[in-house]
Amino acid sequence: MQRALLFLILGAIAAAGVLYGLRQAQRSSQAAVASLLPRETVVLAHLPDFNGTVDEWHRSDIYRMYQEPAVQEFLKKPSSRFSQNQSPSSAFHEIEELNAKDAFVALTSMGNDTPRIVAGFRYHCRQDVANRILDNWTAKMDQAKREVVQYQQHQITLFNQPAFSLALVQDQNWVFASNDLEELKAVVDRADGRMKDPKTLLNADESYRESVGAMPSRYAFLLYVQPKTISEKLTAARAALGAPVTADQRTLMEQIRGICATTRFDAGKIHDVVFIGMPRQDQNGELARHTADLGTRGTFLYTASLMNFSNQFALFSQGAGTNIFGAGLQKVTSGLAAAGITANDWNFAFDAEVGMVGDWPEDVHWPTLIAGCGIKDRARATKIVGVLARAIDEDGEWQETDQNGVHYWSMTTTPTALAIRPVIGLSNRLLVAGLDNRSVEAAMQRNEKPTSEFANSDTYKRAARSLPAPTNFFAYFDPGLLYSRLDATLRPLLFMGAAFMPAMNDYVDLEKLPAAEVITRHLSPIVSSQRYAGKGYIAESIGPITLNQSGIGIGLLVGFSALRNQQFWGGLGGFGFPAKVHPPKQPAPGRGRGKGLKNPMGASPQPSPTGTP
Image (cartoon, rainbow, N blue to C red; front, side):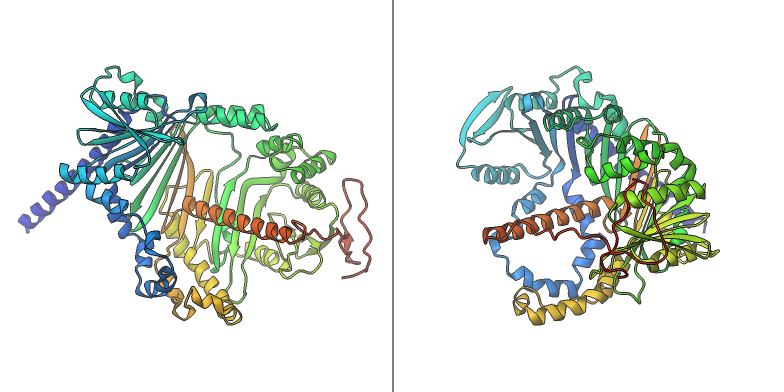
């Protein structure tokens, strides 16, 4: 028994030593790359271990979902439409052969609007393998004019084309490339130890050390940004476009010392950490996440954040020409000013914490989305909501009613397929805004219950504990629940669409669409938490994919959809149609009952041409 215990202790010590060694090795790896770059480096992307990252990716939840037999069977038909020359490049497998370590790309300078870029990696394979792969890469640049430059016992190969130039060199087991010959020579000097002054190196920069020091010691990918140069370029660009940055915005950008982000794999999940080095901003209150009580067992999205209303008012007060949100926000600003409402009125009326809940019960076809905020002073809050309702849509007709101690504002709109009807409910404790009566009233009723199906669920609690407690922002997203609801709603529609559009069957075989549970068993909740720690803000996210990656994916999808929409309307224009058809604006129909909302702007609502809807 004692011998077994001894072996167990020795094994634990050995495991701890290996883990410590790996962490120290990665720290040394990152420091080695920083020692190759100048102190004024603007952007650095670092991939410590290409093969190791690929191995971890193959053990991730998303890749396991992709490898499901049902998913592979479904993807056969669409993937067969791609020809061999559209398949992933063999360069990926060549990098695996090289066993590349410490791959990096850096933007070292943006002087005279000419970016200087340098990249490199270390190969850990036989020299003949490295020579074969590198020769294969350079052979593909057969259209470029070649020139060999001798520098410090190294041969630098220049590839010159009208559009760009590239300098390439091998230094021991390093391979470096740059679009600037002098920049490449400086990297070679640092690699060979000829630059003796350590103060000129990136790892001597205080902002860089502070940013990287806030990152985990183990990561699959790191991105560092020195914002000073970029913010100066953005400020100049906005000024050239006639939208100069305000003094408050400029001060905020100048306060950011450095930005760093890492991604790593954690037990099959992806874990992002983002650090923004800056002083702590003023905030009112602490993030208690009370609005989680508004959720149900069908909640797939929950966010909570602290709002500094003083900052929001400063943003609103910009002139119409410089306001990035345009005339719509300017109308709100004018309405608040006309009613004499100030930032202090907001702070006295509402809690600083604002929550948002996305809910999709099993017995409805589409999800609902509501926003909630705690109330400090009901009288002030009532005045502010009345002004906002009128200012947001001065042509709309709002109905005011009271029910069970809650005051409701309901906007009357012309019937649409989605039946969107903005509703705001206000009680002594809570404000809730949504797009239909049912969701807002149900949220108000849940707020009166002592327990919450969502906030007290094991799934939510376990996910929330996976990250440090937030102080500024928190988000929870359940992609598995959302996918199951989408599958139940859209699957019949897809089959119906295939019946009316047989051409769809040339691309996908809907009969092989995987069952929802095949997908959802790999989709655990995504959580994001932001807090202030040390000398900056740290935002973390973990899940099968992270909140950052979800946002990037949604952004790309929205951008692609907008492009397709523009092409569609542009195509109609080519056939003689206008670029877009805007129906004439009609006055909103009146309700003909209840207490109409007085227009604080002084304009009287237009009478309904039809009476009641």
